[in-house]
Length: 409
Image (cartoon, rainbow, N blue to C red; front, side, top):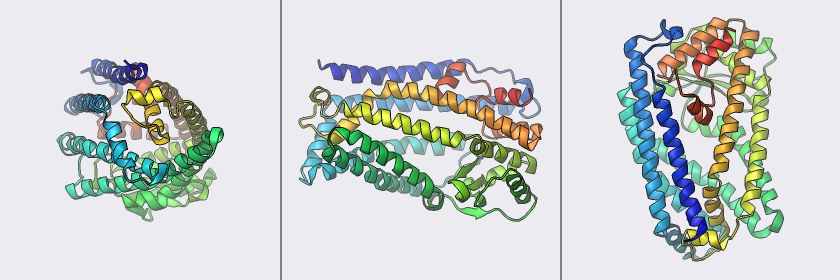
């Protein structure tokens, strides 16, 4: 049997069982005893509801991944990639167009399978726990918008990558690296004004105490921004969030309408002080630099596996191609991606602690931030006691009890 086929199958199965073990450990950490910190926020019934929500989401995630695993393995063993490649080549349009058709078909098939799981999660699980506010019309509209963006943005960068690998020789991976980084930064820059408004309405925050306090805080700490906006997150979910988008003076603060309804003015300013801390402490820049380095390493490693006949044989491919090489390398990259994810999550959790401290030091109202964290956890039915292994593999934010403890230190 082909050694690459054995390796790919082993990586696929191992990745699933790693996820299985991590999530089962997380379920084992569930405790019926409500943490003392939350006894003024949770009642026993809602706390039990949060644990039931965790169980349902975990089981759903494991079943979904198991189905995708089985489908992927069958697709590989039956030569599904070769069938699609044959169809893409039948148009005789050259390697770049052929690669775009090949990838587009795979993306479309994946999305058509995924939409059923996404619909179940939205209209069954989220509905069961009172979160869902998405209508069928909005759900279908989001699906087609996301698919269109994937084809347009993904198609542009894929075409550039394929073109460089076709014409640039041994240095192609460097040009692809530079082009990908520039394109990603461009997308981040235009996202607040072009992409995000496709899904949500950005409405300038009305005049009042909240807007005044936010602007006063930003001015006091020399934080340039375009403005403060409310977005209609409630049309999809009752969950709440807040975020910054854009760079420099074009940065905008976005508050979910659900967040404004659920929090006091001081809590909202504390949340935004935390987010501003990420900018002031250069977390955004550091994350961008990390992404640039990992993207470069990925392209370099990818260049070593281009047109590998043994790798193509593992996927029952009859002809070699750059575009299929990129896809098949993704299977081999899985363990490296997992390792990068662990490191990235650890760095992200460190940044969250630092941003919390920045909020505490500059805003001065520790209890406002504590109250905001507690309300976010309760309203979103967050897991208060995740297993440490789950935190290592999946958490970009520290568990809420650790954040509260650090704030009060």
